[in-house]
Image 1: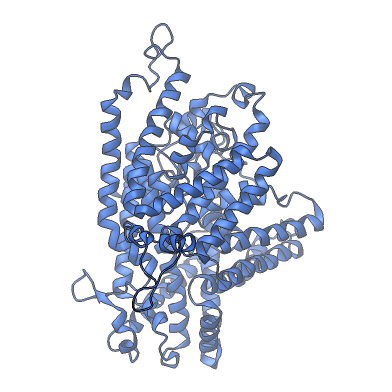
Image 2: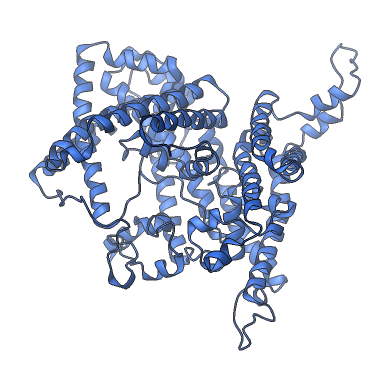
Length: 635
């Protein structure tokens, strides 16, 4: 019983039903026919083949072969020593402990200090109790609001004998539900913004208004270009002007005077700046809002092409049971593109701070019709998984102090090459968890509120061997956003042949350059974006040199060749992410020199590559097992 529940808890169905329901399938029937057993999660309509693309080229299971028994031993020993190496570096007995001990705080685990050095996660961690209170209150306030207006009587389709819902058609009831939800979202967002940012909320409203005018007032052909120019300008201006302090704005327009000490006198702007709310640096978090601003403008722009013929009527679709792809691609109704809905969407409280990213069309569709994917049981399991991840992070930062060690920059000669490597690896683990936890928290909040955004993290960080597939599963909602609003409009890689690949790589470069700028306007992040694009090339070239069709009769040899290439890809992924999000180029240079400056370091590197090779074979087999169950996640 307990084992069955654990399997269900860690099933793809619990993580996100988008993984078990094809993007083009109406979710209601698919979810009803889907089996709860996580070992067989895909819909099986009429007992037919469950797979999305059949089971061609699927290899027989290798889990119980001698080869994989050997891999189990190697992986188990490797994982044990990986943890041990970092824990040993974090002990008080280590020669460098005094160099970073001042960065540690008192922890809640008895006798342990906690590594709360990372400012980004530290800010989230200290606000978790308050966020839990808000997450509890928000759905309760919505229920109270709906109860006050008796929304249940006119926003749910309960057909009467005459075919109406309390005197309304089902479509009118859906419109009433949208209006009811948006009214609450607008009111709550105003209070939420005021609490978070104080008087800075008026700066946000000004940017929202200007972006709205770009979509509504400019000639249609100028809207896409103007939208991108405006929002890129906002990203740069927010960074360079540090959020537009009122004191500086007032000082620019009003004559400046000096005090008796020769210092500029305070103006009214200083008073406004002093009421900056719980998060005065609103501009740091505004990057996520920029994505929603672009989504609204481009969804509106594309909707103008379908004003004459409704896609719903043309395809004879049920608007209450749209597939995920239809929710995203079918435009909202013309009158939905108004400032009220726009404000409610861009400032939607559960997703405002960190996403996941939901398109405007999808938000409006889910506001009209509650998603079939949201159930109490599924949301409860998702909440349990979030708590498990949160506790995992807490245990890690209480026993492994790699973040503080890298911040202190101690004498690296006191560390062995193996220790240096594992400190870098677990630094990436910390980055993965510090992003995963807020994303899952805010998605859980949205699920509790009746909105189902995409899951951002599809696989564990260690379960990746391909640069291209890694970015499909890391910050997945942003990846889907980039495809819809940037990569495909640029042309994607639709052209056949060599020049199609060249264009695809150029578009990759443009996309990752934008992603780097979006994260933060820093040279190291641009270097990260360009490195990621560069590291895509070996994967593409290897695909040309070693096509799968040539090894159709020798799949084991092909699997071994892919394993060797995958080890190189993993090393490149680690390098790119350490440069972009942890160490920078200088820090990486010191890390690599520490590992490769001795024969023992090279010996460890060879051993690590062999261990990675065994892990890659495990990843290959895991994906083959998914294919045998009809799952193809493309990452």
